[in-house]
Every structure is written in structure tokens, then in C-alpha cells.
Length: 134
Image 1 (tube, rainbow, N blue to C red):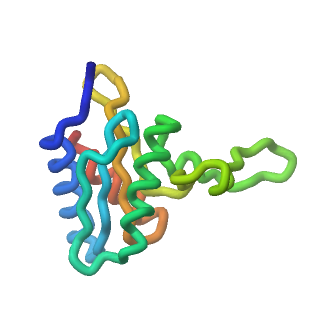
Image 2: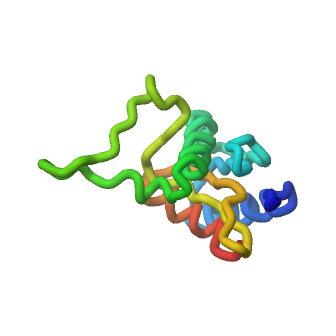
């Protein structure tokens, strides 16, 4: 059974932090296991406190849908069906960029990473940078 280790989660957070520093950003990173349980968490000095919950929600969403959250944030098109989630009915999910699922070498889901600290596009870029070498 594939599991994400604390060592792997720590490496992902270190890579995300380095990417944020390179962009002059202050961000929060959360790594969850495949059951959406927190494995590792880091808030860079000066990052918004609100980003704590947002990073966790993005990671949770990426695990639950096994997809990057940016892909779930598609704009509405008149006359076409769309995903609709209400916080009341789906607490803890966030359909904006910044969450990515994590897979092992065999393509098995092992968790998700969430990043928060900028715009959805910036957070998506941080999450992808954090996982680029994973």
C-alpha cells in the first residue's frame, strides 16, 4: 500500500517554499495523505493567517477529486452543465487553483498538496513547482 511519508511531504514543502521565495511571496503549504489527513504543514513567516485553512482545503479537494483544483475551477458556460458545490454541502472543499494530487511511481494516489498565499494562478504555480521533482 502506497503512503506519503513525512520525509516526502517535507521535501515538497521545502520545494514550494523555495519557489515562493523566488517569487517574493509568503505562502502556506499543506500536504495530506490519501485519506485527506494532514501529514505536514508550513506557514512562511508573514504569510496570511487565512491561507492556513485555504491550503488545507485545496489539498483536500485535490485528494477527493484526484485532480488539480485549477482544473475544477472552470468558468461557467451558459447552457452547459457545470460542477456546483456549496460550502454548506461540501465543507472543506475549495475549487480554485493551488491544490494538486500526489501519486506514487505507479500512478497510485498517495495524497495532495495545497498552496495558498497569492492569486489562484500564483498558488497553482507554487503547488506545481513544489511537486515538479516529486
